[in-house]
Length: 130
Image (cartoon, rainbow, N blue to C red; front, top):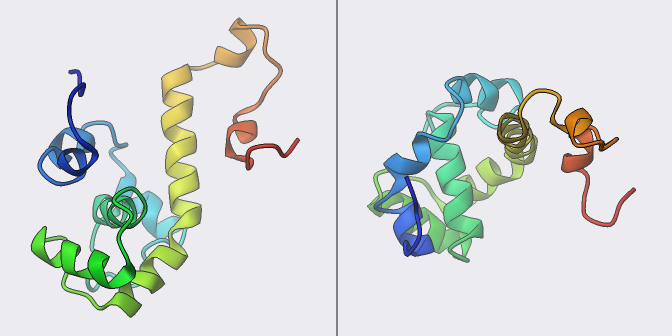
């Protein structure tokens, strides 16, 4: 299922259901255990938290615009301060989600098969940090 030719906005807005297929089944539990979803008032699922983070980061929206965008997309009705609080708690969730997706993509023992000595933790370090 190729996504060639789809704009970033389409991917996050109209094609979000396609993105959901890539996510782990336990994304809600992951969001809770990593502290990304401490209170489940406005943001009730891990997928909603991920979409909110994408909306802010990828679409390059302000906090206020992200709140308005989330409202129009049916994600959540929240203030810019609430968006800030949710996004501030999201990095451990996003890191673990990305680690799992990279690990799934590489497959079990992928580093050993390719002769690499890198561990999965190497993928979670900031670029340039050894």
